[in-house]
Length: 197
Image (cartoon, rainbow, N blue to C red):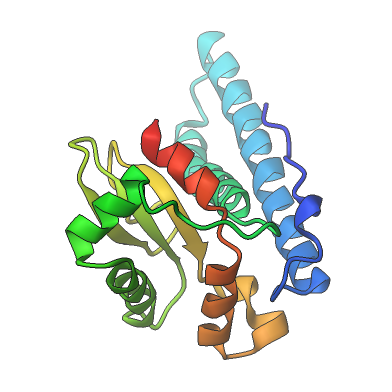
């Protein structure tokens, strides 16, 4: 079973009011609860099947499909909260991640524009993520739903939630203002650790 992580240290984060954060933490808690509930239900059906009762096949199939949504929702939120910090950090000019981003995008500003515009290209809900692929290449991906758009064997280095719940209660329809607040609060130490794994 998964244990809900405590991200209340982010309360008071510049550009993110506490109501917005508390609502977001509650949503995340729901993903943890639902992930654990699905694990329990799937386990019960598995136990029934082992004892010879195989009548819940359709329910089992649906629970397995739903599991990816809930589990990824839990983990994506954890990655998102972990890459935010009240303590400002910047990438060191000698950092490998910065050099890699400059090699790929021409400059850090170009990377930032690509990451941000990637969000702007979609009029819907989802996540935007900087990833490191299994072949060590970097890229920016759009994760439309928690279980749609993740690339197999890729590692998320930096992720931004652009579902409406991430910004609407504070910013209304001004998603660009939320995105600016996100950039001001990135924990680059965490991003570098993810990159260097």
